[in-house]
Length: 174
Image (cartoon, rainbow, N blue to C red; front, top):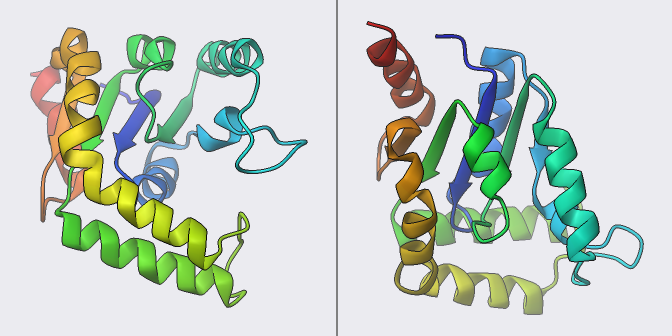
């Protein structure tokens, strides 16, 4: 099976963006970050986009023949779940996620990589959200993904997302 459409979901610091870039190289698909749809690009990060506009943009991009979508969101992304060939759910350990968040925020605040305006306050809020993700958000993600169990690839702590994705593609072809 050729992978043309991939949705990657996971908590903050789970490796969604990193995995999306790797998958884009491997499968020759463009990557779309759901943050770019969720937040208002004109008024800035931290201001919600208009839901109708956000939903229309998601619907439009998922009509394309090839794409990788990545983000923490699950409540409004059903078109992407439905149209994806595979859905990767990334669930590394909390300690791994938080170390990644701290490393990324420090790098951005020091100007070593592109920043969305991170500050100590926003980093603290993201760490708190990451801490509550497994108990408060992950159950809703799992519920939203239940109808798509046949194309769900759950990547747990210490597993290689692309290797597990590749195995899922060959397993379904046999």
